Length: 180
Image 1: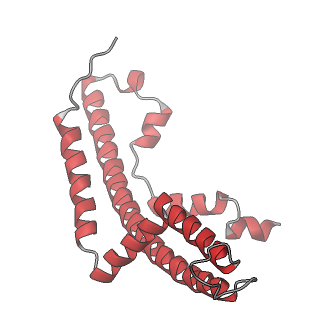
Image 2: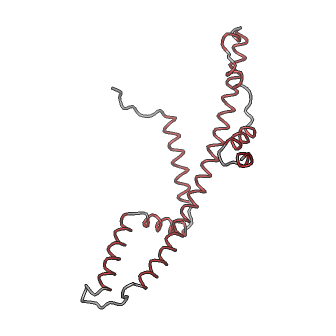
Image 3: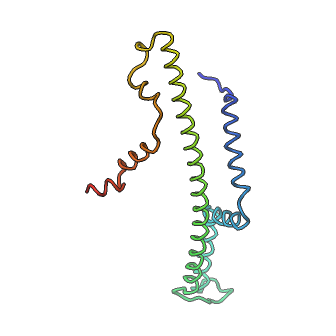
């Protein structure tokens, strides 16, 4: 059985840094963005579904004459209800799209940050391999330790070449479409 141990300090620092970035993104939202997010959050909840189910059932019951307290004002086929639901769907979808666009922008920002960290990590790893190669060379164990893959990895990665290769090999890329 393994004990539950506290994560290492560096992990906690990374979590804190990520949380700080997330908090900054939330704090930097404009008032309209906050309103839009609140509406989109409500629309995506079970409360929204429950309110709509109750409202729609009430509307139908009222307008077919099953609630005698009030008279029907929107008889079958419920044109006012259809108009209201159509207008609401336009507004709801707009709020959802606004939130999705903002979340997509944040995801792009995170992806750019991740790419920068990855590129920095790759450079660091390359430098470490090059340094280890020099140490091994000075100790006279170069031929015994280093294999072809290590030699390959210690060379600087051409990111632009990797990006082109990835693009060319992806399904539905321009190169794939031209071949068919």
